Length: 307
Image (cartoon, rainbow, N blue to C red):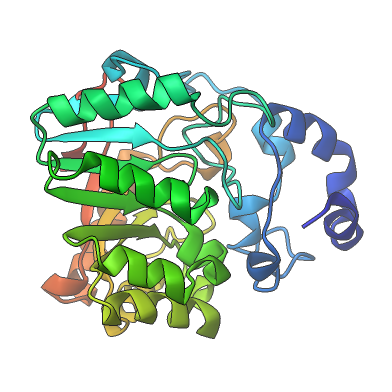
């Protein structure tokens, strides 16, 4: 989506756009835009992707490296927090940029992809790490061509038994989930896909088709959500989402407490608020519909359950 159409729907964004886009690019897919009520600043989908004057204000609790990735990065494009798994950043590109993203340290065109030498070194590290799993992340790993994604998977085998793809593309750009891609991923089992959906309104018929094609091909799909003020900070809304995911054979895996990303104070909740919402959610959904509520602290120690 381009700036003129978005600003036409929300004239109040004209002044904030340039500075917000300079700090972190504003990108919205056509598919996601069609689900938004752009005239409503409180729309839970719009709050995730459209710039806000609030993100230009600093906060005392903001952290430059909110989950401690830099402390656990032995090589460029590699994060190794846990002995059993290694995370590889396939790219810094995304189809859509979430305003609360904890990886907002890049600019368009600046080292958005690893060099061939950097990528070769990253793959070598993962293969020799002794890890059971590799997580392909980003950016969004589905923002690269099929051949590059599949060659990465093939290069990791047989050293790495299990591969995960962490992507928001099935939700934000469901047309990316083509029959050819699904067939190629299914042929490379065991492979898991972890998607990212925060609100039940993100689940459109087009998204349903993308998710179903993966599940029916034998690719297990899990979901991660981020607890965000004005988006899903309500147990009933979260319950609607979790139930809808389970009906689609997608397991609600994690509910992340919001990270202390710079410029996101207006989207964050306190731990006390989060615990109260989660306690209410536990009473509303079954065990298979209840995600783990976790926090990823800036010391790089990794995810831990909240309370």
